[in-house]
Every structure is written in C-alpha cells, then in structure tokens.
Image 1 (cartoon, rainbow, N blue to C red):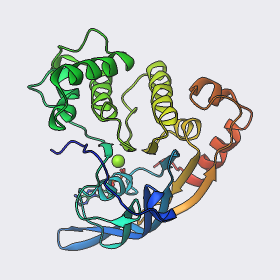
Image 2: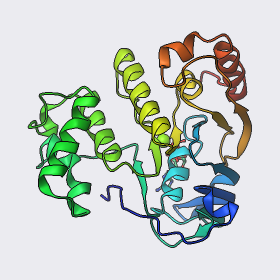
Image 3: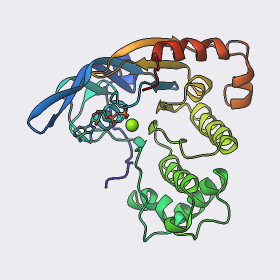
Image 4: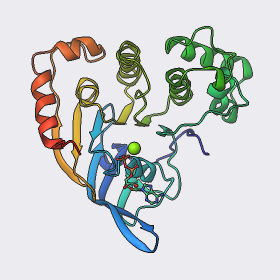
Length: 273
Ligand SMILES: Nc1ncnc2c1ncn2[C@@H]1O[C@H](COP(=O)(O)OP(=O)(O)O)[C@@H](O)[C@H]1O
Ligand SMILES: [Mg+2]
C-alpha cells in the first residue's frame, strides 16, 4: 500500500486561488457493486485554507474515507474538480501528507524505520532522518519503543507510529482519516493537542475526518457535517472557542463548546438501528 508523502508542491501561480491549498467543487463519486452503480459522494464542495483546521464529521458509511482517498489522488472522482493550490493535478498531490484509516505499517521495519521511510526517500542524511524520527516518536509518547516491530505494539501505539510517519515529513497539508480513533481518552487529548500545536505553530493546514464530534469541535476552526449517502455538505460551523486552541482540555471547557457539540449531534440525526 502507498504511504504518503512527497515534497515541494512546485506551484508557480501567485493568484489568490493558488494560495488556497485545497478547493473541491462539485465532486461526485460512486462504486460499481456487482454491476450496479452505487452513488457515495453526491455533489460535494469545500475549501481548506492555509493555516486552517477543518474537521469533517458524517454518519458511518456516508463516504468520508472515499472522499479522503479521492482528495489525495488514490481514487479518481467521477465528476467535479479538485484543485491543489489552484491547480487540477493528475495523481497524488505533492507536499500533502495523509494518514489513511487503515494505515498499515511495514511489519518488517521497526517503529523508527517505519517513521523515517519518507525522509529516507526524500534523500535526507541518515543521521538527520534518524534524529527527527526519534524526536517525533518521543513527542507522540513512544519514547523507548523505537526498536519495536509493529506486531509487538498495541493498536493505539501503532496508530501513533503511523501518525508520526505522516507528521515527521512536516507537509504543508495534512489529510487524516480517524487518526486518533484507537487511542484511549487521555492519550487522545494529548496527541490531539500535539497535532494542533504542530499544525498551528507552523501555519500548516489540516483536514481531519473523525466520527468524534467533541474531537471535531475542539480541534477545528470549521466543522463540516456531511449528510447520509450519497453524501453532500449538510452544514458548516465556524468554531469560535475561548482560550488557547492548542489545548484540548481548555477547548472542551470553553463556554461555547457544548452548544456546538449539541447542534452537530442534532445535524447528524443519529438513530439507533
Ligand atoms: N471499493 C469499494 N467498492 C464498493 N463500495 C465501496 C468501496 N469502498 C467503500 N464502499 C462503500 O461506500 C460507502 C462509503 O464508504 P466509506 O467511504 O468507507 O464511508 P465512511 O468512511 O464514511 O464510513 C459504504 O457503503 C461502503 O460500503
Ligand atoms: Mg471511514
């Protein structure tokens, strides 16, 4: 399976549009299932601006993973336009790091050598690749586990290694599909905060897919709620919370937090089946 991550987007345009990392216009996508066409993404438009964190929430099976895979060029859209820095591109966008929902680590590489793979491919000096990868593992709470093979790590630890592998390349744009789902609550808050810090302090952009409404609200500048399949944008919320936006506990304690959560919960129209 392909794993992320390339360098230098090489865009030469300087128009306003070329400075917006991601613009999605009228994208539709369906699958052929046993000879029948099943529409998954209806007619979907969104933008991700520089320095912005946007969360996408939607009902299970609505097409979130399909959308992310389409945006990072792994599967083609049927209709619509996807522009990276103002340009439609063929294949995978450059300088975009993504972490897929089923983000497999190479079982024959240790945690550290999984993380440094992208840096090695980019031709970084071995010692620098080693140091940066080790520092990223430390930052994500994996100090002492660098030499472990994936099979000897818990699900949450493997997910953190996969996240480290994406973050260590410091791409301008991150697309993450449920990256914190396997973490316990305390680790989730810490790693969400670390991710927010990395993105906000470096002016990066993040599109985060999550089924966790509180995570969506606490991290994001904007939350996009998707409808059921064929999915489209049902609602969008600009999130305005008091206090430090890289501290997930502070975000959850802010005055406006629960009103957003309640509203988005209502939008999702969750029914037990
Ligand atoms: N490769 C595929 N072929 C056929 N159907 C697929 C394929 N991938 C996903 N689907 C279907 O598309 C729908 C959306 O899936 P997915 O994008 O994984 O949703 P989500 O991530 O929101 O849970 C589901 O009904 C799923 O079964
Ligand atoms: Mg999914």
